[in-house]
Length: 141
Image (tube, rainbow, N blue to C red; front, side, top):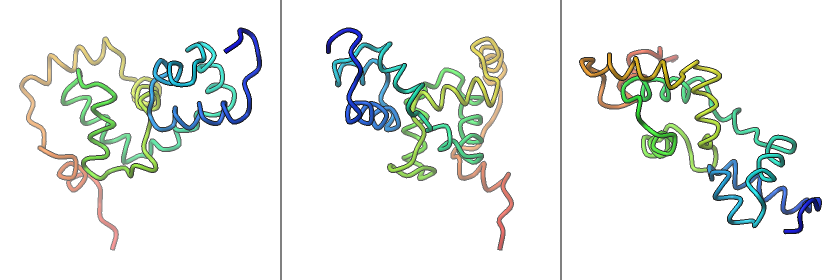
């Protein structure tokens, strides 16, 4: 791609779509042959509304998993959300949305997670998220 040239609307839409599907900026950059900086600018200016996908239930699950295993990567959280049926393939948070939620909504920094990791060695957690949700979310009839 030519340096400094404006991207076409279809290419911008493709970048946003790939981002909302969970691809990293580097992967998108390699796929569409645009610099990672350019991809980042497009996402910041024209889209990246995937934070809406991080509902309270999803955020609760992310928080539990991260507290249970602070070293878990966003990709693993994303996969677990799909495997446990918490999110559909059509609508689930991107890796960037998960990481943003951890820092912005939950205030989980590397430092605070390091402390949690030390403390979680002795803690006992439910095996699945469904068990946690069953314990914490009242069922409306």
